[in-house]
Length: 270
Image (cartoon, rainbow, N blue to C red; front, side, top):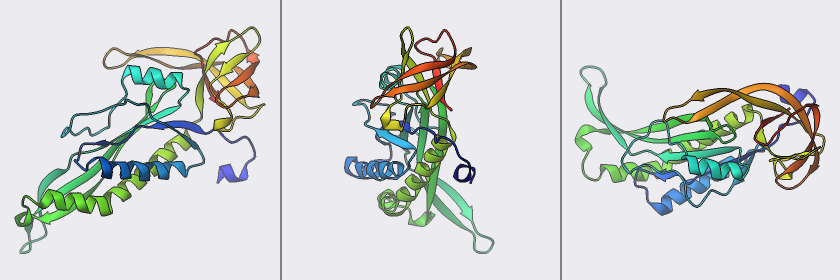
């Protein structure tokens, strides 16, 4: 409501690289490709997202291993996406089916049930500062009477998941991703500094126009993450810059306030 009734600049679109869904449930390449296309179509409907072609290699996990909170990108992939000016990267895993036996109902109608869980875990990584924006699992259950379970049950679960459950799961996951991106301001970096101007990794493709302003932030406190990787928390604002001339994927900006700008500093859309 606030966006609709208050004047001001709209935020820039976010460049989102979506890696192909990792199929750990055994749907097969053709079916997984259909899921990928449906998921991308949902994401492409958002006016806040510019979809980027994924790299030729990406994250993977072992078949049959449940990753409840998704997968993360390795350092090499992060470096490659940063060099391309990507804002966010999305990794999705179709989890292996998980069966749980339950006793349901009230006496004298109690019975044993077998619940098969169909689920997709997604992780969205902020490529600018290599931190997690979103990690989320969406699931649905398919229930059978325990005595009905046999060697054909998993195939029945797979067929029902294709027809009913996966489309609903992917729709909810796409909605959650779009909401998370919408709530977070566009962030990028200064990629080069000259005597009077600088280059930034935003361009016409994300809706940038001359006059758009960015806050510039110094690196903050460094935190050591699990595995020994050092992360720099966003520090204090050190100045402001303005886009002067805009190209397709980059732009030239000029200082408005502050000084000592250098390549690598994080910028955030105002």
